[in-house]
Length: 439
Length: 76
Image 1: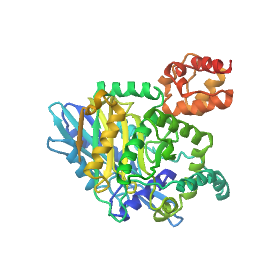
Image 2: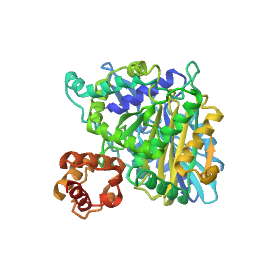
Image 3: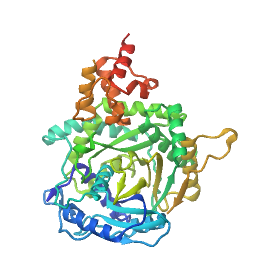
Image 4: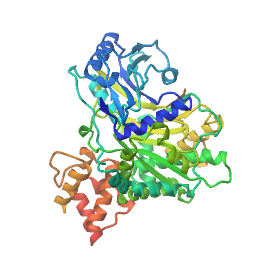
């Protein structure tokens, strides 16, 4: 048995909340676009090798009598593989996210491999995975591992938190974060969650930008906020777009934004295991007065990142997560939800940087593009996720059916694109991204 | 100052095994947006300077030598 990390325990609580409210499992799909055509034999051999090599790919997660969640490894059963007929990607992704074979509570696979030819000489490998077992860096490492010839079993898991000590020590260390969270209700936090509306199917839209558009977006970032402020810049863009939608829904109200930002504990990916989650959630609050132009909002958010670090709140958050690891999943989110009147945060957001930076080829074929499509819980009902591959920026908008009306989705995209690409003179519509498709 | 900076980068920020010299390209060994913020804070605390957002340029953070120049200009 392998103890869940403190981050796994947080993700388990989120998944528990999703299941209890009819939202299903907390899954992500990772898309790797490759040159050439899919080869069934190669995929089958890869899936069999992965199952032999990594016992956690057939593990289930459950809490013990001491309430600590643990992974219970299973046998090397082959992982599901399916080669789908040629066609568009988005309907396949929607179907996979809604009807997975993965269930972390039961013995069975924790990874599905799907292939779909997209066009002559181009196909997509889709990895479907549970968020409790992997994070984005882990998936990057798994992609590199797909090409390994070695099938000897590996123990590529383990905890990375530095939070240790007695409950008293942990509480003392966690207190600054608890005090910070107690300050959030000064503002009425809202998300796109609609109270008294049941959460429904996962929905997403992928905005993909060409290398030229991506270069222009980077140039705009450099001139608006500075070339090195990537994290606060994209977080500010996500916050402003979400705020525009909430402002439409609650006209006249002051709209704060509480961002929940996953930050890796380990700077060097080589120093962390492939499996399990190794993130700390940073909660950064943008009060209504913090919003100005995009450059101003970015600089304000940059100061908030620095302040979060200066006050050692990441360490406090780690201690809090360690304290919470024995908390039954159904109660885990209750304190935050109580303080925030049924909310968790305004949105989930991340920019995971270069997608699979260590890999240029897979199965002897070139990696042409890649991005993630995470499902999100409701509340908050919305996630805005960025990554880059081969000088192409991708933005995944992920929401739950019913959390965004068609008009609100349009406003979200228009605001995002205006910030990313700028408003041309004369108020003409912003350039559409190279491609965009909705589930 | 460069040696102290290299030690901060190697042990506290980049978790890097190799040597970090005065002219090591920090972006090539993993200095990303989060690491920049950690470095900014470390520099402000250790060397009692204030780094403005306008100072956060690739040129100023490319190497320990460039960062040292920036710190000295702030201390002058």
